[in-house]
Image (cartoon, rainbow, N blue to C red):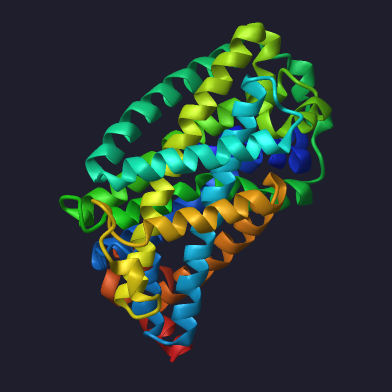
Length: 373
Protein backbone atom coordinates (compact mmCIF):
# COMPACT_ATOMS: atom_id res chain seq x y z
CA UNK A 1 0.00 0.00 0.00
CA UNK A 2 2.76 2.45 0.89
CA UNK A 3 3.54 3.40 -2.68
CA UNK A 4 1.90 5.70 -5.17
CA UNK A 5 -1.08 5.84 -2.83
CA UNK A 6 0.60 8.39 -0.63
CA UNK A 7 3.51 9.69 -2.69
CA UNK A 8 1.69 10.44 -5.95
CA UNK A 9 -2.02 10.37 -5.16
CA UNK A 10 -1.77 12.85 -2.28
CA UNK A 11 -1.50 15.63 -4.82
CA UNK A 12 -4.16 14.17 -7.12
CA UNK A 13 -6.68 13.80 -4.25
CA UNK A 14 -5.70 17.19 -2.85
CA UNK A 15 -6.57 18.84 -6.14
CA UNK A 16 -10.17 17.72 -5.51
CA UNK A 17 -10.64 17.72 -1.71
CA UNK A 18 -8.15 20.46 -0.84
CA UNK A 19 -7.53 20.93 2.89
CA UNK A 20 -10.08 18.23 3.74
CA UNK A 21 -8.19 15.47 1.94
CA UNK A 22 -7.31 13.88 5.28
CA UNK A 23 -11.06 13.25 5.79
CA UNK A 24 -11.14 11.56 2.40
CA UNK A 25 -8.27 9.28 3.46
CA UNK A 26 -10.19 8.31 6.61
CA UNK A 27 -13.36 7.55 4.63
CA UNK A 28 -11.35 5.70 2.01
CA UNK A 29 -9.84 3.56 4.77
CA UNK A 30 -13.27 2.74 6.17
CA UNK A 31 -14.47 1.63 2.74
CA UNK A 32 -11.29 -0.44 2.37
CA UNK A 33 -11.90 -2.10 5.76
CA UNK A 34 -15.44 -3.10 4.78
CA UNK A 35 -14.15 -4.47 1.50
CA UNK A 36 -11.26 -6.15 3.30
CA UNK A 37 -13.61 -8.09 5.59
CA UNK A 38 -15.41 -9.52 2.58
CA UNK A 39 -12.19 -10.43 0.76
CA UNK A 40 -10.71 -12.03 3.88
CA UNK A 41 -13.77 -14.26 4.23
CA UNK A 42 -13.65 -15.20 0.56
CA UNK A 43 -9.90 -15.83 0.73
CA UNK A 44 -10.25 -18.10 3.76
CA UNK A 45 -13.02 -20.10 2.05
CA UNK A 46 -11.28 -20.26 -1.36
CA UNK A 47 -7.50 -20.04 -0.71
CA UNK A 48 -6.33 -19.75 -4.30
CA UNK A 49 -3.56 -17.66 -5.87
CA UNK A 50 -6.04 -16.03 -8.26
CA UNK A 51 -7.78 -14.04 -5.49
CA UNK A 52 -10.75 -12.12 -6.90
CA UNK A 53 -10.54 -14.15 -10.12
CA UNK A 54 -11.39 -17.24 -8.09
CA UNK A 55 -14.08 -15.52 -5.98
CA UNK A 56 -15.98 -14.14 -8.97
CA UNK A 57 -15.93 -17.57 -10.65
CA UNK A 58 -17.29 -19.20 -7.48
CA UNK A 59 -20.04 -16.58 -7.19
CA UNK A 60 -21.19 -16.30 -10.80
CA UNK A 61 -19.85 -19.48 -12.35
CA UNK A 62 -17.23 -19.85 -15.08
CA UNK A 63 -18.85 -17.92 -17.93
CA UNK A 64 -18.43 -14.86 -20.13
CA UNK A 65 -19.30 -12.45 -17.30
CA UNK A 66 -16.85 -13.86 -14.74
CA UNK A 67 -14.23 -14.16 -17.47
CA UNK A 68 -14.73 -10.50 -18.36
CA UNK A 69 -14.33 -9.43 -14.72
CA UNK A 70 -11.18 -11.52 -14.46
CA UNK A 71 -9.70 -9.85 -17.53
CA UNK A 72 -10.66 -6.46 -16.10
CA UNK A 73 -8.91 -7.35 -12.83
CA UNK A 74 -5.74 -8.24 -14.69
CA UNK A 75 -5.98 -4.97 -16.63
CA UNK A 76 -6.42 -3.05 -13.35
CA UNK A 77 -3.24 -4.69 -12.03
CA UNK A 78 -1.36 -3.54 -15.12
CA UNK A 79 -2.76 -0.02 -14.61
CA UNK A 80 -1.69 -0.08 -10.97
CA UNK A 81 1.81 -1.17 -11.98
CA UNK A 82 2.01 1.68 -14.49
CA UNK A 83 0.80 4.16 -11.85
CA UNK A 84 3.43 3.01 -9.38
CA UNK A 85 6.16 3.04 -11.99
CA UNK A 86 5.17 6.56 -13.10
CA UNK A 87 5.29 7.71 -9.48
CA UNK A 88 8.75 6.18 -9.15
CA UNK A 89 9.82 7.91 -12.35
CA UNK A 90 8.44 11.28 -11.22
CA UNK A 91 10.34 11.20 -7.92
CA UNK A 92 13.52 9.92 -9.58
CA UNK A 93 13.38 12.72 -12.16
CA UNK A 94 12.84 15.31 -9.40
CA UNK A 95 15.66 13.85 -7.32
CA UNK A 96 18.08 14.24 -10.24
CA UNK A 97 16.68 17.67 -11.15
CA UNK A 98 15.12 16.37 -14.38
CA UNK A 99 11.49 17.04 -13.47
CA UNK A 100 10.71 19.00 -16.63
CA UNK A 101 11.19 16.05 -18.95
CA UNK A 102 8.57 13.34 -19.42
CA UNK A 103 11.17 11.27 -21.25
CA UNK A 104 13.32 10.93 -18.14
CA UNK A 105 10.26 10.05 -16.03
CA UNK A 106 9.40 7.25 -18.44
CA UNK A 107 13.01 6.03 -18.61
CA UNK A 108 13.17 5.74 -14.81
CA UNK A 109 9.72 4.07 -14.75
CA UNK A 110 10.69 1.49 -17.37
CA UNK A 111 14.02 0.86 -15.63
CA UNK A 112 12.45 -0.02 -12.27
CA UNK A 113 10.01 -2.38 -14.00
CA UNK A 114 12.93 -4.16 -15.64
CA UNK A 115 14.93 -4.40 -12.40
CA UNK A 116 12.01 -5.79 -10.36
CA UNK A 117 11.10 -8.16 -13.19
CA UNK A 118 14.61 -9.62 -12.91
CA UNK A 119 14.24 -9.92 -9.11
CA UNK A 120 10.99 -11.86 -9.48
CA UNK A 121 12.55 -14.02 -12.18
CA UNK A 122 14.83 -15.44 -9.52
CA UNK A 123 12.02 -16.47 -7.17
CA UNK A 124 9.61 -15.47 -4.40
CA UNK A 125 12.26 -15.53 -1.65
CA UNK A 126 14.01 -12.60 -3.33
CA UNK A 127 10.65 -10.83 -3.51
CA UNK A 128 10.06 -11.23 0.23
CA UNK A 129 13.55 -10.06 1.23
CA UNK A 130 13.34 -6.95 -0.94
CA UNK A 131 9.80 -6.24 0.30
CA UNK A 132 10.74 -6.41 3.99
CA UNK A 133 13.70 -4.04 3.67
CA UNK A 134 11.86 -1.51 1.51
CA UNK A 135 8.72 -1.29 3.66
CA UNK A 136 10.63 -0.95 6.97
CA UNK A 137 12.64 1.97 5.58
CA UNK A 138 9.48 3.58 4.19
CA UNK A 139 7.39 3.34 7.35
CA UNK A 140 10.15 4.64 9.64
CA UNK A 141 10.80 7.71 7.49
CA UNK A 142 7.11 8.47 6.91
CA UNK A 143 6.32 8.25 10.63
CA UNK A 144 9.19 10.64 11.44
CA UNK A 145 8.11 13.05 8.69
CA UNK A 146 4.45 12.99 9.77
CA UNK A 147 5.37 13.53 13.43
CA UNK A 148 7.66 16.49 12.76
CA UNK A 149 5.22 17.90 10.20
CA UNK A 150 2.41 17.85 12.76
CA UNK A 151 4.64 19.53 15.36
CA UNK A 152 5.46 22.41 13.00
CA UNK A 153 1.93 22.58 11.56
CA UNK A 154 0.41 26.01 10.92
CA UNK A 155 -3.15 25.76 12.36
CA UNK A 156 -4.42 28.62 10.19
CA UNK A 157 -3.80 26.55 7.06
CA UNK A 158 -6.21 23.84 8.29
CA UNK A 159 -9.14 26.08 9.30
CA UNK A 160 -12.50 24.40 8.44
CA UNK A 161 -13.49 27.54 6.55
CA UNK A 162 -10.92 26.53 3.91
CA UNK A 163 -12.52 23.11 3.32
CA UNK A 164 -14.33 22.53 0.00
CA UNK A 165 -17.92 21.33 -0.30
CA UNK A 166 -18.75 17.86 1.02
CA UNK A 167 -19.46 16.50 -2.45
CA UNK A 168 -15.83 17.15 -3.45
CA UNK A 169 -14.62 15.27 -0.37
CA UNK A 170 -16.79 12.27 -1.26
CA UNK A 171 -15.74 12.48 -4.90
CA UNK A 172 -12.07 12.23 -3.91
CA UNK A 173 -12.74 8.96 -2.04
CA UNK A 174 -12.44 7.15 -5.39
CA UNK A 175 -8.78 8.20 -5.46
CA UNK A 176 -8.00 7.74 -1.76
CA UNK A 177 -9.58 4.26 -1.78
CA UNK A 178 -7.27 3.39 -4.67
CA UNK A 179 -4.35 4.27 -2.38
CA UNK A 180 -5.42 1.45 -0.02
CA UNK A 181 -6.07 -1.02 -2.81
CA UNK A 182 -2.91 -2.98 -2.09
CA UNK A 183 -4.72 -4.91 0.67
CA UNK A 184 -6.33 -7.00 -2.08
CA UNK A 185 -2.92 -8.42 -2.93
CA UNK A 186 -2.82 -10.20 0.45
CA UNK A 187 -5.54 -12.59 -0.79
CA UNK A 188 -3.21 -13.80 -3.56
CA UNK A 189 -0.96 -15.32 -0.87
CA UNK A 190 -3.76 -17.49 0.56
CA UNK A 191 -2.23 -20.68 -0.88
CA UNK A 192 1.14 -19.91 0.67
CA UNK A 193 0.35 -18.74 4.22
CA UNK A 194 -0.34 -20.74 7.38
CA UNK A 195 -3.93 -20.79 8.68
CA UNK A 196 -5.54 -18.42 6.13
CA UNK A 197 -8.85 -18.45 8.06
CA UNK A 198 -7.17 -16.49 10.84
CA UNK A 199 -4.18 -14.80 9.25
CA UNK A 200 -5.82 -13.31 6.17
CA UNK A 201 -8.23 -11.29 8.30
CA UNK A 202 -5.47 -10.16 10.66
CA UNK A 203 -3.13 -9.20 7.83
CA UNK A 204 -5.76 -7.19 5.97
CA UNK A 205 -7.10 -5.25 8.96
CA UNK A 206 -3.67 -4.55 10.48
CA UNK A 207 -2.39 -3.35 7.10
CA UNK A 208 -5.36 -1.07 6.47
CA UNK A 209 -5.19 0.27 10.03
CA UNK A 210 -1.49 1.15 9.80
CA UNK A 211 -1.94 2.72 6.38
CA UNK A 212 -4.95 4.78 7.51
CA UNK A 213 -3.09 6.25 10.48
CA UNK A 214 -0.01 7.14 8.42
CA UNK A 215 -2.00 8.46 5.43
CA UNK A 216 -4.22 10.65 7.61
CA UNK A 217 -1.30 12.06 9.59
CA UNK A 218 0.68 12.77 6.43
CA UNK A 219 -2.29 14.43 4.71
CA UNK A 220 -2.83 16.70 7.72
CA UNK A 221 0.89 17.50 7.93
CA UNK A 222 1.21 18.23 4.20
CA UNK A 223 -1.75 20.61 3.98
CA UNK A 224 -0.89 22.10 7.35
CA UNK A 225 2.44 23.25 5.96
CA UNK A 226 1.58 24.06 2.34
CA UNK A 227 -1.08 26.03 0.51
CA UNK A 228 -3.35 23.98 -1.75
CA UNK A 229 -2.00 25.59 -4.92
CA UNK A 230 1.54 24.57 -3.95
CA UNK A 231 0.44 20.96 -3.45
CA UNK A 232 -1.37 20.93 -6.80
CA UNK A 233 1.64 22.46 -8.54
CA UNK A 234 3.83 19.64 -7.23
CA UNK A 235 1.09 16.98 -7.28
CA UNK A 236 3.30 14.23 -8.75
CA UNK A 237 5.80 14.73 -5.90
CA UNK A 238 3.66 16.56 -3.32
CA UNK A 239 5.08 14.79 -0.28
CA UNK A 240 8.66 15.77 -1.11
CA UNK A 241 7.58 19.38 -1.71
CA UNK A 242 5.78 19.43 1.65
CA UNK A 243 8.99 18.47 3.45
CA UNK A 244 10.76 21.70 2.38
CA UNK A 245 9.15 24.09 4.91
CA UNK A 246 10.24 21.86 7.80
CA UNK A 247 13.35 20.01 6.64
CA UNK A 248 14.58 22.14 3.74
CA UNK A 249 16.46 20.63 0.78
CA UNK A 250 17.68 17.69 2.86
CA UNK A 251 14.12 16.71 3.69
CA UNK A 252 13.15 16.98 0.03
CA UNK A 253 15.95 14.57 -0.88
CA UNK A 254 15.16 12.11 1.92
CA UNK A 255 11.45 11.97 1.07
CA UNK A 256 12.23 11.56 -2.63
CA UNK A 257 14.55 8.64 -1.87
CA UNK A 258 11.90 7.15 0.43
CA UNK A 259 9.39 7.45 -2.40
CA UNK A 260 11.71 5.41 -4.59
CA UNK A 261 11.91 2.64 -1.97
CA UNK A 262 8.18 2.77 -1.36
CA UNK A 263 6.96 2.74 -4.94
CA UNK A 264 9.42 0.02 -5.91
CA UNK A 265 8.16 -2.05 -2.97
CA UNK A 266 4.59 -1.63 -4.17
CA UNK A 267 5.53 -2.46 -7.76
CA UNK A 268 7.16 -5.62 -6.45
CA UNK A 269 3.96 -6.69 -4.68
CA UNK A 270 1.56 -5.80 -7.50
CA UNK A 271 3.74 -7.53 -10.10
CA UNK A 272 3.65 -10.68 -7.95
CA UNK A 273 -0.15 -10.44 -7.78
CA UNK A 274 -0.55 -9.74 -11.50
CA UNK A 275 1.39 -12.83 -12.46
CA UNK A 276 -0.70 -14.91 -10.03
CA UNK A 277 -3.88 -13.56 -11.62
CA UNK A 278 -2.70 -14.37 -15.13
CA UNK A 279 -1.66 -17.86 -14.01
CA UNK A 280 -5.09 -18.57 -12.51
CA UNK A 281 -6.80 -17.29 -15.65
CA UNK A 282 -4.63 -19.49 -17.85
CA UNK A 283 -5.48 -22.47 -15.63
CA UNK A 284 -9.19 -21.64 -16.08
CA UNK A 285 -8.79 -21.41 -19.85
CA UNK A 286 -9.48 -17.65 -19.94
CA UNK A 287 -5.92 -16.72 -20.97
CA UNK A 288 -3.52 -18.41 -23.43
CA UNK A 289 -1.54 -21.32 -21.96
CA UNK A 290 1.67 -19.27 -22.14
CA UNK A 291 0.63 -17.43 -18.97
CA UNK A 292 0.77 -20.70 -17.03
CA UNK A 293 4.22 -21.73 -18.23
CA UNK A 294 7.34 -21.57 -16.09
CA UNK A 295 9.50 -18.50 -16.67
CA UNK A 296 12.82 -18.85 -14.89
CA UNK A 297 11.94 -19.43 -11.24
CA UNK A 298 8.78 -17.35 -11.58
CA UNK A 299 5.30 -18.64 -12.35
CA UNK A 300 3.05 -17.39 -15.10
CA UNK A 301 3.35 -14.70 -17.76
CA UNK A 302 5.78 -12.38 -15.99
CA UNK A 303 7.24 -11.21 -19.28
CA UNK A 304 3.81 -10.36 -20.77
CA UNK A 305 2.87 -8.33 -17.67
CA UNK A 306 6.09 -6.35 -17.94
CA UNK A 307 5.54 -5.60 -21.63
CA UNK A 308 1.91 -4.50 -21.17
CA UNK A 309 2.85 -2.26 -18.23
CA UNK A 310 5.60 -0.66 -20.28
CA UNK A 311 3.10 0.25 -23.00
CA UNK A 312 0.78 1.96 -20.49
CA UNK A 313 3.74 3.86 -19.00
CA UNK A 314 4.73 5.22 -22.40
CA UNK A 315 1.28 6.22 -23.66
CA UNK A 316 -0.55 7.56 -20.55
CA UNK A 317 0.30 10.22 -17.94
CA UNK A 318 -0.07 9.83 -14.18
CA UNK A 319 -3.47 11.51 -13.85
CA UNK A 320 -4.98 9.47 -16.69
CA UNK A 321 -3.68 6.25 -15.17
CA UNK A 322 -5.03 7.17 -11.72
CA UNK A 323 -8.48 8.02 -13.10
CA UNK A 324 -8.82 4.83 -15.13
CA UNK A 325 -7.39 2.72 -12.31
CA UNK A 326 -9.66 4.05 -9.56
CA UNK A 327 -12.86 3.60 -11.58
CA UNK A 328 -11.86 0.10 -12.66
CA UNK A 329 -10.95 -0.99 -9.13
CA UNK A 330 -14.18 0.33 -7.60
CA UNK A 331 -16.26 -1.52 -10.20
CA UNK A 332 -14.38 -4.79 -9.64
CA UNK A 333 -14.78 -4.58 -5.87
CA UNK A 334 -18.50 -3.84 -6.21
CA UNK A 335 -19.05 -6.90 -8.42
CA UNK A 336 -16.96 -9.09 -6.11
CA UNK A 337 -18.95 -8.13 -3.03
CA UNK A 338 -22.30 -8.54 -4.79
CA UNK A 339 -21.14 -12.00 -5.74
CA UNK A 340 -20.16 -12.63 -2.14
CA UNK A 341 -23.77 -12.05 -1.12
CA UNK A 342 -24.76 -14.98 -3.33
CA UNK A 343 -22.45 -17.39 -1.50
CA UNK A 344 -22.49 -15.77 1.93
CA UNK A 345 -23.52 -19.03 3.60
CA UNK A 346 -20.36 -20.71 2.34
CA UNK A 347 -18.08 -18.05 3.80
CA UNK A 348 -20.05 -17.75 7.08
CA UNK A 349 -19.65 -13.98 6.98
CA UNK A 350 -21.13 -11.81 9.71
CA UNK A 351 -21.79 -14.93 11.79
CA UNK A 352 -21.05 -12.94 14.94
CA UNK A 353 -24.06 -10.78 14.24
CA UNK A 354 -27.49 -12.14 15.00
CA UNK A 355 -29.76 -11.63 12.02
CA UNK A 356 -32.65 -12.60 14.25
CA UNK A 357 -32.02 -9.67 16.59
CA UNK A 358 -31.66 -7.28 13.68
CA UNK A 359 -34.69 -8.35 11.69
CA UNK A 360 -37.11 -9.96 14.15
CA UNK A 361 -35.98 -13.55 13.63
CA UNK A 362 -35.98 -13.24 9.82
CA UNK A 363 -33.33 -15.40 8.16
CA UNK A 364 -31.08 -12.79 6.53
CA UNK A 365 -29.25 -15.31 4.39
CA UNK A 366 -32.56 -16.58 3.05
CA UNK A 367 -33.45 -13.04 1.95
CA UNK A 368 -30.15 -12.70 0.12
CA UNK A 369 -30.68 -16.01 -1.66
CA UNK A 370 -34.25 -15.05 -2.64
CA UNK A 371 -33.03 -11.75 -4.12
CA UNK A 372 -30.35 -13.36 -6.27
CA UNK A 373 -32.40 -16.37 -7.33
